[in-house]
Amino acid sequence: MSIPQGFDRQATTMRLVGRTARLMFSRRDPDRARALAMELARTTAAFTGLDDPVRTWDVALQLDRGLGRARRLHRLVNSPVWQSDHGTPTHVKAPEDSAADYLFAAVMNLVYKVPLSDEAHLFRLWYLASRAVNAPDNATRLFGNLRQLPAHQQLAAGARMMETLPGPAPALRGPDPRPMVVLDSTD
Image 1 (cartoon, rainbow, N blue to C red):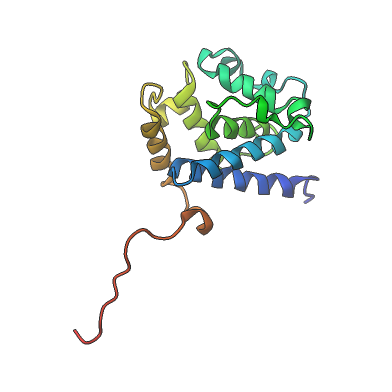
Image 2 (spheres, helix red, strand yellow):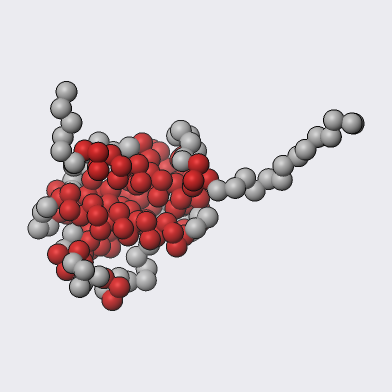
């Protein structure tokens, strides 16, 4: 069996997408989650090689009014200006662009190139349930309509579903917040 060229890099990237999704849902370090998601969006843009990567999306996603910001961000991430060293987009990034938006751009860059990991697939469905006006049936069945919920409840819904998957990498779990109980053998 031959391994496609670049597969190792794409598989590693997919693992990082899953870890970033778990970190974002945990709400422990939002700045780190956003930075990782931005870097993933930037590095995965090279995987598409398309002038307008949004045209590869399902027609329903291309037309959904709730995904307008996701489409704009996805086009920005895949534009040569954003990828160049001179065009580092600190001046074009809107503050409302969240880790979720950048991570969605990364997932959409990967979705047609490599099979999505469970975390990436779950994240994609969560994003659609929380943003799309007409979310796909599988997203609605899994999460319901998250659009009307506040952001912290949307993230909590994603975290609950993420807990049903195998555990995250230990580096993202952080220290256990519960105090350790030591039993004295003299009792």
